[in-house]
Length: 216
Image (cartoon, rainbow, N blue to C red; front, side, top):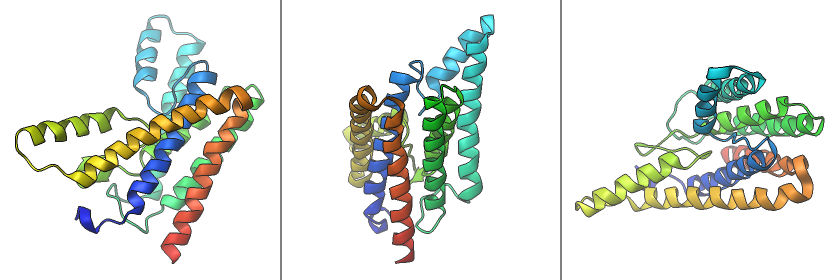
């Protein structure tokens, strides 16, 4: 099954990982040092904040719910978790682009709602591709990617065959996310919140390319 999957999978995963790494880097640099592409830190901070509930704790709750809302949008648009050409990935990416653009406008206006739009965009993207050849694949964080890659390497040491293409995909996601973080670190000092235009444009271009690919 893996050998029959088209090469655009690796390319798409790379650019999605770059996009998410860039958004997360901008978030860490500008959103009160708040990561938005994943929720592990936010949920931990929220749990700590429950000891003395404050506006900051409520803000974290809204970030968490926004991520959930973004994933729900993906669930409405995409009827199955397995990767398949022809599903509404392009529509989801267009919505992600709009959410990132709205996040930029809100943050430029000094509104914390920009954090929620950015978190929703990441939640939507994270739910786009969830299953690839029996492995859970995420493009907005790399914890699961490193875990699966480690499991595969450990199984290889036991003498089991190594799924080379899947391993390459995981490496591509790790490299893409790292490069996205570097991109955000370069863009934010120069453009501040306007730097969100770059990942928003990336999502828009990916959506257009996907629609063209499907129709060709």
